[in-house]
Amino acid sequence: MKRMLSGIKPTGQLHLGSYIGALRNFVNFQDDYELFCFIANLHCVTFYQEPQQLKKNLKDSIALYLACGLDPQKCTIFLQSDVPAHAQLGWLLTCQSYMGELSRMTQFKEKSAKQTDGITAGLFTYPSLMAADILLYDADYVPVGDDQKQHVELARNLAARFNNRYGETFVLPEPVTPKIGARIMSLSDPTKKMSKSDGINKGCIYLLDDLNAARKKIMSAVTDNLAKINYDKENQPGISNLLEIMSALSDEPIESIVNRYQGCGYGQLKKEAADIVCDTLAQIQEKYNEVIASGKMEEILKQGAEKANKISYKKLKKVQKKMGVDIF
Ligand code: TYM
Image 1: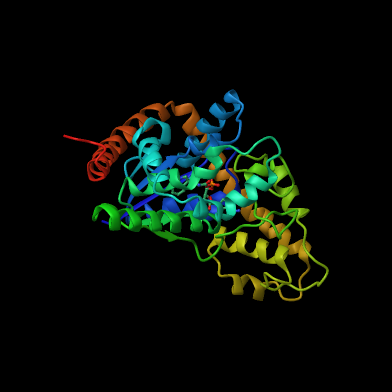
Image 2: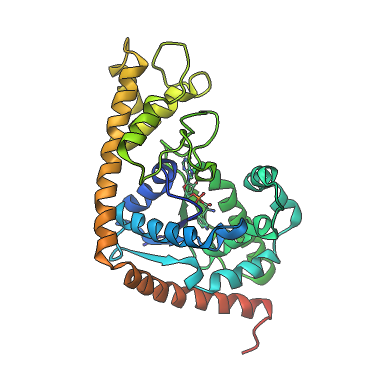
C-alpha cells in the first residue's frame, strides 16, 4: 500500500477552503492508502498565538478531523509536537536548505510582507520543517491544496539533494491536489484565497460557523455584473468560485450545474450554494458535538503518536548515521 501524509495548521478555525482542498480528500484516501494525518502545531507558532486560544483551536482541529470522517482505525492521527523527530529532522533539513530557495517560497514572501511586528526565523525555515514532516514517513503522496504544492516540491528537492549527498535515504514525495477546489477563493474578494489568517470576515466560512451566518456570507458573496452563469475564473472569479464549492460538495460536475442555471439569476445560484454548504456544515457540526462529548480524542492522539514515533525515530536514526552525527 502506498503511503500518504498530510497536515493542517491549527492557526485558527478550520474553514471551507481547507476542508475542500485537503481534509475531505484525506477522508476519501484513507481506504486506499496508508494515511498519516497530523495537526501541525509546531508550524503555527511562527507568529504569536494566544496560548488559551491555540489550545482551543488544537482541540477543535482534532475534533474536526474526526467529525469530517477520518477514522483512527484506518489512519494514524497525531499531534506534530508529540513526535520529537519532526523538530529534529527539521533542523537537519534546515541545514540542507539554501537561503535562496527558502526566500523564493511564495508563502514566505506573502506572509512576511503582511507581518508588521517582526518576521521570525521560524517563518523562513518553515518549509524545511514541513519537508521533515513528509520525509520522515517515506510518504509517496502528499494531498494538499494549491498553495502548499511549492512546499511539497521543495521537500522533494531536499530529498533528492540528501540522497545524492549521502546515498539513498528518502522517498521522493509527490503533491496531490484535487481537480476541483484546490484553491477556494474568498467570498468577499474572489481574487484572494479563502484563508483562516484573515480573521473573522465575510469572505471565509468556518466549519463551525453558525449556519445562518454561513448562509449570509454566501448570499453576500462578491460576484460581477455580467449577468450570466459561466465557469470562467478569469472574468467571473466570484461565480466560478461558487460553482467550484457546489461541485466539490455535491459531486455534480461544474458543466452540469452551469447548464441547469442557464437564464437564471445569481440569487438562485447563491441560494443553492448556501443550501449545499449549510447541509455540509450541519453534518460536520453534529458529528463534532458527538466527538467532543465522547472524550476519546486524548487516547486517539496517544495511539497515533506511538505509531508515528516508532516509524519516525527509525528514520531519524538512519539519517543521523548517514550524516555522521550518530556513532553507534
Ligand atoms: P494550512 O493549514 O494552511 O492548510 C491546510 C490544507 O488546506 C489547504 N487549503 C486550501 N485548499 C483550497 N482552498 C483554500 N482556500 C485553502 N486554504 C488552505 C492547504 O493547501 C493545505 O493542504 N504547511 C501546511 C501544513 C503542513 C503540511 C505538512 C501539509 C505542515 N506540514 C506536511 C502537508 C504535509 C499548511 O500550512 O496548511
